[in-house]
Image (cartoon, one colour):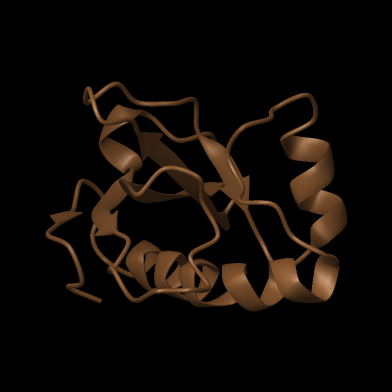
Length: 114
């Protein structure tokens, strides 16, 4: 029911120079998916220029879920004007993460494989 280390699927993602709707402050990171209580849950783990990783940040199209799961976590998302703008930025990565969850557990994909 709860994922173990080998249950996660990962993909490196990197902001393209011309990308204006990149939702994260970090320009590079991991998109991670695991099934939690049989439901796919997608996380972003940012990487700073020194290669240090941030704490996992759950992403979803359900803004209430994002707020509750990530309560107290700051410094992950670029500033946004409203939830509509945030959703527009997050949806492609949530979709990519859900496709990632369709891969076998333990999958580690290179950048832009999905």
